[in-house]
Image (cartoon, rainbow, N blue to C red; front, top):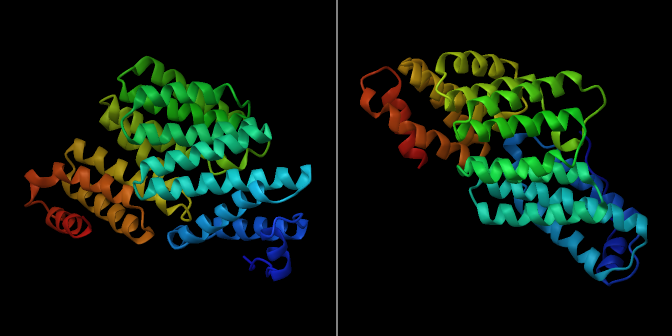
Length: 312
């Protein structure tokens, strides 16, 4: 990927002085943000402060500068995109209140734009956070609202999949399967390019999250099959997702009694999560590690528990 264009200092200073914003300055901001968003997962952990600065700049421009409708639309889109990305950074580092704050700001900007698809995506992020924090009922309510905001098949597939997970957490097997079927049907019927926020949604995600639902419903054998299949399909570029999925696979193996295989998979997930700087994924493995303590003599378990203690 090429480098973003160099910023002309005169354009920056004129915008900071409350004058009319030059379109070239907005173009530079858009290009720079796109460049940052395209970084490899392992490198994104180093861009947090830069993204914060860009967001503060864009908000400052919206509040203090003069601009026409076209430029305002571009700035609100940038603000929404940046706030959504920063929300994920905060979430990955377990700063959940801050994450919710940024996602709410992203939702406000999307509402100002009248961009219902973007709004649905941000609601999906808020729901994912609720699922992660074991707040299934909140997630279901948010996802029902999100489903009313988009008709894109890929987007609806992701929303149904996340709702299925929340329903599984509540033990509602029938409703969970209904949403899993809806997620699969929607993904299979998708033909046009989806909104950017769900462009990564794939059969790998469908398989693994379906398996995660089956774990919650107590169907460990089928769950392991689905998760293993999904992990194998996942593109190598999605390391954070791989760490989460490997943790699901390790949990499924542990429940199946395959302790050595499970410990090796959990160790792989932990090393990957540490490398990309995602503390919530590290905690996911740390929480799972308690299940290995009765099996310290099994191959790989002591190494895993030592790595968990070191990472804590």
